[in-house]
Image 1 (cartoon, rainbow, N blue to C red):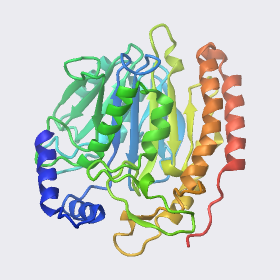
Image 2 (cartoon, rainbow, N blue to C red):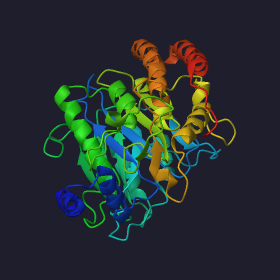
Image 3 (cartoon, rainbow, N blue to C red):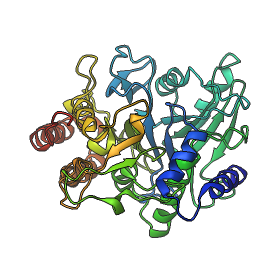
Image 4 (cartoon, rainbow, N blue to C red):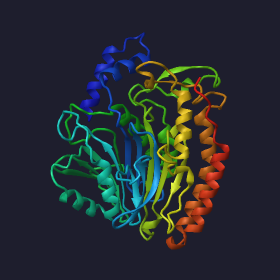
Length: 425
């Protein structure tokens, strides 16, 4: 990894003349180091360092199919909740979630674990669905991988936790995998491991997602130092992290005076991207807790303009209506956030998705879409934390009334206060 970073830094220093702007640097670097559209940013955190001493998986999902939703599915062995494409009516592919045994899984495409060709894999979503309906432990997941027909058509990092406290990455290629255990101080000295779109055991000439890797590493290093590695802090903050990992540009420093004060900015290789479709954080359980007390904090839609909610598995499969698919259009939160996103990505031309108007996103009058949404989310989080605390004290088979009460309140409150999308200017 250090070899790749030094090559990119050396390249960028060569072009960074004294009078060159950081935007020019960003344009040059991203032109010569393009990213695939399927790019994600993720981290796993061991219970030994996470606040609350529960293991954590986090994934910011980038995909061409931005119409996402959350579903509760009755699998072959276990029920599970997961993020799915809205038009995948049978939920044949799942892109992160947890099951009633306390097993949870996420992924990032790696592109370099089957050599340097940068090939994508095609079975990630199917494998994660299969794992969620069959697996209870990391050992179960390893056995599943061991028994798959080879080649597996996989080129990905899979992050997994279980109710026993297991927490690991599996760098998986067509023929096998390498495990990185976050509970092992030799592997993860600070108790966490980040991934974007390359594997540490793969081709070093094809490290994709380096800029986002730098950004999430910097964020995690600071959060670790500040002792703020909590589920709620991470799900609220990382999907809206507006500091570029390579250039150091912080868009909060560039806020225009108002929402009407147009300010175009380069927006490539930040953690949130044009094709970011959701964020999910799965908080496992600690010793003595029921596996059914696992929580999936989901932000469905374009995360800077959507709201995070805790999703649990209940006897009746209760779910907030905001995250459930409405036909093939995606969940209500997805649709609203994508409409608001159009105001921000308003450039024209082939590269229009690489530029934003910062003013309707954030501004010094605090009237930006993300600022309004975060105000809503602050109140939602206040109620959500109370709900989660009470949920963990409640027998899982008696959790329906508690979950339904919170979900009904959240549905009503968010629909009432969410900033109404307006036509693209």
